[in-house]
Length: 379
Ligand code: T4K
Picture 1 (cartoon, rainbow, N blue to C red):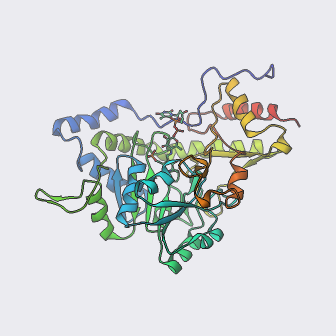
Picture 2: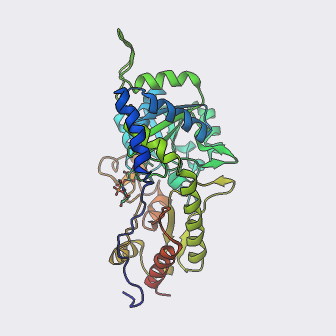
Picture 3: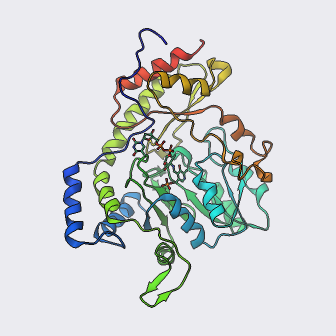
């Protein structure tokens, strides 16, 4: 440990949630209390749905109790079956929702630059059992939506985007929820916009709204009719009220993160062996994560060593998304999980590290994190 670099007094986590004013939240809850209406499409829920539809610039949206149940419902609503192609470089939820739908995940390699599914490698994985593609806008970086759509159209496949990290991201001024058949957002507390737990599906096709809303409410059509095997995916009023308050802070949070993000980039650009993930061309980023890759041969230390050493300074970086999903015990026997099929993913999985990024951090905190990081280098 370098003498002049003291550990932080308090732990510095990879992220911290927006915490809205408690009195304002209480005011909202008072109206819930008065109405004695806690869930099942209440007033807060309806208001949040309307506001998010506008904020995200999408034509249809349906709120959920979490992003995973939203994704499970999305697969069901499009009647996906057989095989769906996805990325191994994602959170466990992505392949698991396929398994919960009795669908076999087929892992496709990723692009080294964006860390997203490599659209050029999709076609070779399509079989007569393929019904869809589930790409992830990983770390909020948009996938190559044009190329993926072209392939899907050619083979008659559905696309469900996992945009758990991409709330508020735009490409060429178009909200990220406007691509593919369905887009899922997560509103978990670790996400920039959050409802503690929560999520949503966005889609263009208006008829899908009815089906999705039925599926998330047990398939209940009326008092006397249950017309499909649904699930309980409903967002409650406490979550929705929290979301309405968090929304008020979102633009300010993004601005703060942008400043910190740019400061990180400026500082780290001259550190040999550290690569910063780009935000992408024509992309209005939400700055959900600040992601670096550490090239051991150049930097002198491995990603794992850096991750461990940071802890001594009270810095809790994260090795998202290690291990690859294709290496989980439940998936590693799949032919598509072979290292040969996933060469880029198997390389970068030992290099990627998420550094702390959230609005309450100060520029000086970033300076210190970067100075500590650079003190680990052998150069
Ligand atoms: N698809 C993708 C690509 C996803 O990344 C996710 C979720 C999903 C689908 C599924 O969406 P949800 O069903 O979750 O809506 C977290 C989240 O639990 C998870 O939502 C998220 N992705 C994943 C990337 O991150 P952990 O295990 O890393 O969370 P945890 O508890 O270690 O939190 C990370 C840091 O955040 C903590 O060190 C401190 C801070 N934190 C966390 C919480 C919960 C707070 O400051 N306050 C809090 O309340 O999974």
